[in-house]
Image (cartoon, rainbow, N blue to C red; front, top):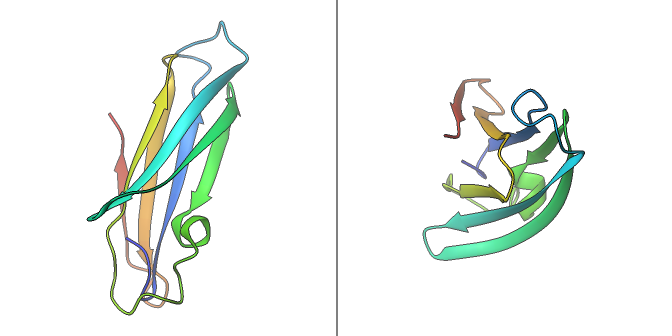
Length: 102
């Protein structure tokens, strides 16, 4: 969820316990809304670290939305060991909800 006083923080984790034999993951991160693909980023995440994203900052949408908007994200890698976590929150009320990838 982004805009209208909401933000979502995303962490994409390269779990070195699941795949200790590599130095980094090449990850394709895609962002979608109800109209389809918004953008795609290709990033390298060092094994044992986390790539952090604020959806409002990443998509430059914080001030332009007058209602909350749902965003879907995919993280793809040729190597196993990538995990995905997200926390959406209301910036005024501090209510939050979390999710994780499978």
